[in-house]
Amino acid sequence: MEEFNGLKVIEEFEAMTKDAERIQSETLVMILKENGSAEYLQSLGLNGRSDPESYKARVPLVSHKDLEPHIRRIADGDSSPILTGNPITTISLSSGTTQGKPKFVPFNNKLMETTVQVYKTSFAFRNREFPIGKGKALQLIYSSKQFKTKGGLAAGTVTTNVFSSPQYKTTMKAIQSASCSPDEVTFGPDFHQSLYCHLLCGLIFCDEIQLISSTFAHSILLAFETFERVWEELCSDIRNGVLSDRITVPTIRTAMSKLLRPNPELADLVYERCMGLSTNWCGLIPEIFPNVKYIYGIMTGSMEPYLKKLRHYAGEVPLLSADYGASEGWIAVNVNPRLPPELATFVVLPNIGYFEFLPLIEKCTKDKEQDKTEPTFHGIDSKPVGLTEVKVGEEYEMVVTNFAGLYRYRLGDVVKVMGFYNSSPELKFVCRSNLLLNINIDKNTEKDLQLAVEEAAKHLAEEKLEVVDYTSLVELSMGPGHYVIFWELNGEGSEAVLSECCNCLDKSFADAGYVTSRKVNTIGALELRILRRGTFQKVLEHFLALGGAVSQFKTPRCVGPANNVVLQILSNNVVKSYFSTAFQ
Ligand code: AMP
Image 1 (tube, rainbow, N blue to C red):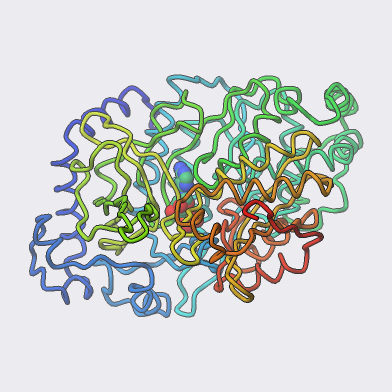
Image 2 (image 1 turned 45 degrees about the vertical axis):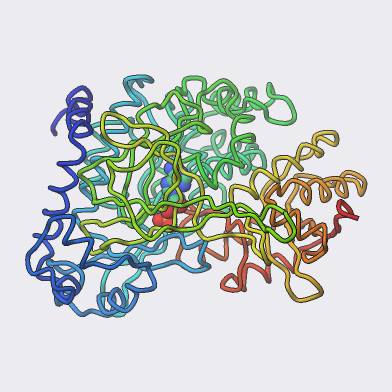
């Protein structure tokens, strides 16, 4: 096995980012050469041209919806060159939590290679700052249900496609601590059972664990919230060397039986460590895993609301935010792992795809008759710019051309350019681009909602409560439309505090369009609906049933008509609701 050489990886990264423009052009040439015979490109009349100008002139910007008929043909078994020169044999399922259902996205070896490059680069920078010794990793990862499409193609979430690939396994073996869990646990068919066994494996090797990781931070939180409930059962399994009968999957039972031996000393040790913690489990991670160096996973964007709770468990252990990518392909790497997740940026790797950036422009016009300032809102300018043409401080929607049949594909993410690393931009993830809350002239994004929730949640502190998770809805069925915010709390709040939170939410949407509309009541009073404990767990289960994986789950921050089932789950679990009196 080739030994991992972090310095060499960093040198290559330096060279590549210094020459980003040339490498982008070469990458485009490579993508178009490899896929020149694809029906899609042929029909656009590129005729072998592969320069950026001809490409942009001939190939339209598309969204997933535009490509769906082509992807459908591939999934149904048509192996002619439709989107790519070589036939696609694997389909990835994007988490689809923002759209309501998973989307099919083509996956191939080239995407696998770029994934490995991203992991290696990111690890080289991470390991330079936080070297990890010999030991094990508690990897809280789960596969999705894998199935065959109508045409017989393998389909699963991209994390499943990646984790099950031999190439990934070989690379990861060379560069990082081995997972403490056997494959049967990671690839088990029931995530509750896998989660329990991940925790059990973590405890069996508790003094060897060097890092704790997952794809998205949500899974780490889910694991330690579960730990709070099942730790005594875990201790008892270790004491007796007998696996809990909650584990029913035979492959998992067999794999775990190879690890589990009666070990009363270890059980006592874990028990003592748990008893040494305060009742709110503050500092749980370093107490149980004293040699853990860091916690690693995507912690930006829709994961930010979970940071507070994660820090509560992590104590002094650093949180390192992972890279930026999607089922459609990786985009950028976190090369400054020391920055806290709130400040994390990602440097685009110029050879893993061809990237364009659609400027989002802030428009602010005057309503002359009333002499009132109209709302500031995001509009999309029609001309995307190239990787090295972006401007620092500006926001853009990402447009991706990858090695697996996506050409000028609007990813639906908004990023902000924070600077340049050599000549490649450093991006901050802002939010999904689909506008969230909009009734008339108001426009509030996922980020605006997050800020409003953070502001309002401060009022919960007096009752030692926290928002476990949240989402929103535009309610148009009665009177003027109004915003509905759903909160799941970790306890019961008083009427007074929750009314205050509701008013605060209403006042915290600072967008001028919202404020103006609220004042003249063209948008009705904001409504805060409190959910029964465990409601978001039900939402998660719903996405798993659709073929999603816990590893890729992101709570939908706005529930639109496409998310009917989620709306039903939420509606069935409302225990109380409050209307704002803020603008009366
Ligand atoms: P999926 O749809 O499951 O493929 O997830 C991909 C999406 O997750 C991206 O389009 C982003 O919206 C989000 N995402 C991926 N990486 C990050 C990151 N580092 N920070 C914030 N959001 C991310």
